[in-house]
Image (cartoon, rainbow, N blue to C red; front, side, top):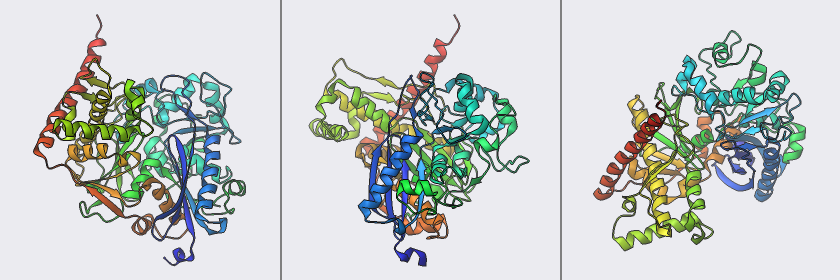
Length: 556
């Protein structure tokens, strides 16, 4: 701990779906001294195509790091290390590190070289991979998602063969957190994060190849890649755990862009949800002393349900078990919802009554629900007894692992008032909570340690309607980290380890993370009975939608 006393800070950078944030953090106690945020753009040239630019992302990173340092009053010589987390998005670059575009409608738009995590263009490729039922799918819940790397790479090979060949020949396919390490090292280091490859690339170090790597050539060949495609130098041959230092640290060019000193220690990073787990799960928790009994709810645009265990847990439709993906020595299971905050934003934005909500629409909806509950003399959750939603507007990530699922609503009236919007919003929030309950049950029925508490972070953790619905549906307390920006803090934890300020990730977590407030589930018998009934409706609606699809697919 002596190194932490010299006054150095660390920088965590979080690249989310719509923005980049950089935070200057005191590694002795985890206090954020300053945070700066900058937006990034997403292109949607076709339905379910979501694209970004790695160059634009990097420019936003530079803006944020410089502004955060200025806001904290920290110079380059006061920064002990930097680390990145980012969305699990696919980045394509050529031999010189230049962007290779992935937009089929604008082949010349090289800057659009990132397939965002939410991109579902590879649904057919994912289905084809799943039809092969390769053993390697066992660690993704038995079903690969179109959000993962291999379906996207197969789509690129089939639909944009020139772009695929350009990268395959001399370039690199990166997960976004790994690209940021590459860029920060002046494109010198091609180290991949163990987290990135294990969670999104079907990499399994427990079954190494003759070269000692976790790539399975039989799997790659079986899904449509030749022996000359996706070789380790293109998709990863140096793989390290989160928090380990990248050789050489920040390169001179990147240092000039970021306002840092060349050689500033650079940590191997994480996917953003996993950084959230590092930032919120490590503090002592009275409600759930064992780490395996804690569920991390990383809730924002999408939601990830992160659960650690000492032994592997194979739950159908739930990603994992991934060894050491978040914490070394532990297995990780990961449920998820592709649209959570995005779903609520969509419902608000597209409703005819949206214009009545003002600049803070979610707060306005909450206030309207509170008014309606008082006027009707019922608990707020019970207002949506006649409106039911299934939340799979962007497919079902877990536990059905069915990208063909779509959202459903039962109980719409002919009116479109502010009250109607409020009830639809509440029903959608509750459907997200019920799906979380469905995911939790899938893990527990597969043998995972029963959960005793939920630790929530992310933008939706500030939404009281959403959080209370989860506490009530799960009948578990929800605990909040003391530092709201837990994802940024998770990245800072990794930086503190790479910079030698703390000896290990667990040690850094113990020093830098702490528990804040706790929310208890409702003890109102009326509310509990309501959720039990409505959960049954949710399950029936989910089953019915799949039955409807089967009926429509019957041959006449």
